Image (cartoon, rainbow, N blue to C red; front, side):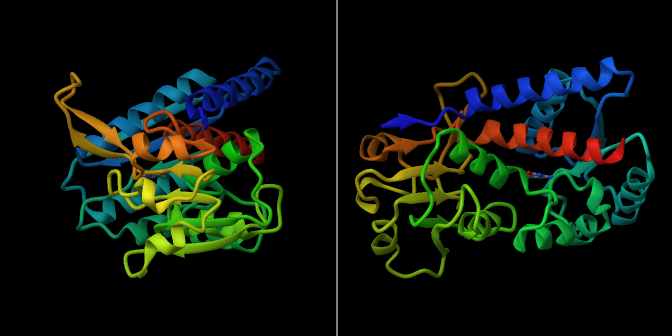
Length: 291
Ligand code: GUN
């Protein structure tokens, strides 16, 4: 069993980006610039956003962090998006999800200029990814493909089972892994809450991508020996072991499943850090198109 060290790989990627940024800045160019908008005070989102800002500093990007109150209206947020779309010195920006219920996430996503949509959530970028054109790929799926590439995990001809069909993870990763590319050519099955006999399907999997947000859902009897586990779950559960009073749990029961696996991503320290590295990669890409 080999642990897939997302923290290590994400640090490598960030170092590679920092080197590249240094070259641009040394040649007299401005650094890449990412903005993050957060609405409301969701604890998880606040932590994610702080980590994104910290990563910007680490790679030499300029960052702008806008915090808006929970009662911000949709019109105001759309105005902010429009302002960012027009700002020539801003390469990319993201609006952290989830948004408060009174704001339409889809409306906000569709208002973002696809050339600045470093989250890769705009339908134009989703469409490009779907037909294999160059665009922005959402950060978590991009991070997963990067782990697969750097650990040289064979996907061609393999049975991949994905749990979860979200627009952010399950759906896009199912598309990428079935495409004709160096980390694709897999036979992909997407399972969800209406899938009967789930265990029969997951036991056939050479690779499982778990993205359902149910802590420790995948148990030893649901996998075959030698399976590759990509655990995208990051549910906060109460814990008396930590100072913060909570800890992150993945969708896979690590204690039970790790000994049966050939490769496994831990939680934390697996897919999570990769998501941020991928956002930095996308921002650098936006910058290169913009300068
Ligand atoms: N919420 C959870 N993951 C993400 C992400 O990758 N981007 C944004 N904008 N919001 C999120």
